Amino acid sequence: MRAYFLALSFICVASAAFAASAPVPPRELDALRKALAAAVKVHDLKSIVALSRFPLAFSGYEAPDRITKAEFLSDENQFSGLFFNGDDQIVACLATAKLEYQAKKPDFPGSPWVIDCTGNEYFFGLVRGKWRFTSYMNINE
Figure 1 (tube, rainbow, N blue to C red):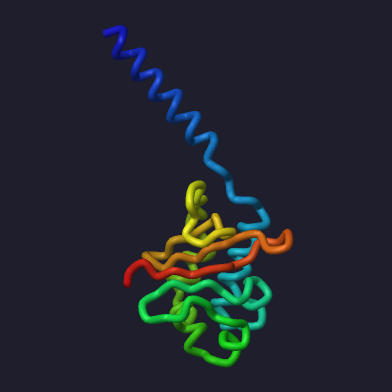
Figure 2 (figure 1 turned 120 degrees about the vertical axis):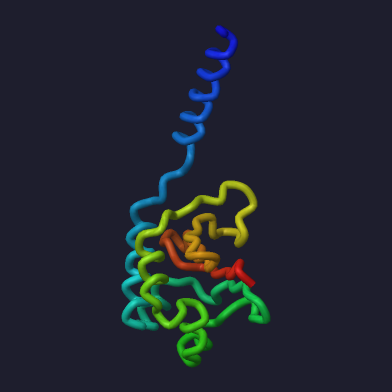
């Protein structure tokens, strides 16, 4: 019985240590993602560009591996493809969903933070000292 309590105590301590070591998203990153959500809501392409790093890495079925700034600004399908035409659920997700940190082998190097919006994953990384939206992956396809 004593061994059981010792094992249970160890598990509780180890779990608490793991939870304490999980990175907390920086305030600047949280502010960026909220600004991105606001820009998506009103279809403000210039603000989205300012909050992003281009070329934007892209991973989706039968899609190019990257989107340039010129392509994003000139082709409305790029906005629709990334943000589902500013869908309210995507906007809410970008603004409020939990930012997850990919400690090992991030899907996109240099973009360790991700928001998963029902399989639409938005990645963020530091670019010249500022947080930016850097990559998108659709894991539903």
